[in-house]
Amino acid sequence: MLRPARSLAFAISLSLVLPSVAVSLPRTAWAQQKKSIRDSLPLEARGHWDAGVALAQRRNWDGARSSFKAAYDVSKNPRVLFNLAVSEKELGRFAAALDYFKRELAEGKGQITAEEESEIKAAIAGLEKFVAHLTVDVSEKDAEVFINEDKVDSSKLPGPITVQIGTLRVRAVKPGFAEASQTISPAGGDNATVTLKLQPLLKTSRVNVNVVGP
Image (cartoon, rainbow, N blue to C red; front, top):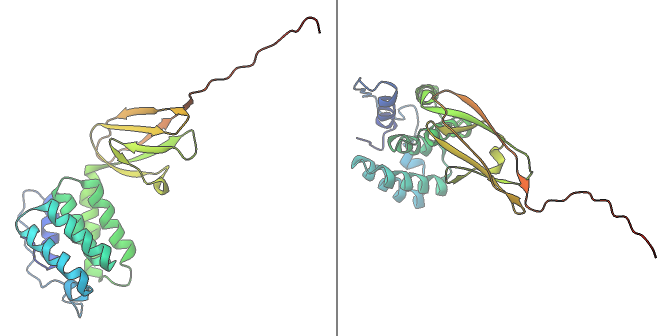
């Protein structure tokens, strides 16, 4: 069960690291903070937060993810990212969960406690074995890159990009060029590289022309 308390959100996340151990963290979440997560959110974000908690209690993780994301988009409070990461993890989207945990570390400097930082790092360590890291080398600048059906943020290229393990189809597209693609199957913890060379659709060649007469 996920409460507004962060501790139980982390208990759920630890089930990935220790699947055979029931984790119980009875401490009061945010005991070292003057405000709870909810109280630190602007009023317009609290409804989304409450909806996310209620949906998570019902294990509707897809709905919880959407609500926690809406709460973060309104508030930009990095402390919301923890429950968003847990929702992604429960949906089996380990790469997305890992990215959110890392974002909380980066965006939460000065706002999260040492204990919270330790919790996040433990969750990251547990998830690393369930993802791979991919570098994509594309021959043409400004080509769009897709991994399966998801478009890759160009700012993350060439990587390494955190990806799900299993079979991945990596492709690059650009107007005026034939699509280039490659299928790989990285294992957990792998560092893989894909090289995509785009070929122009209009081919040119040099010819010699001999003119006889005027």
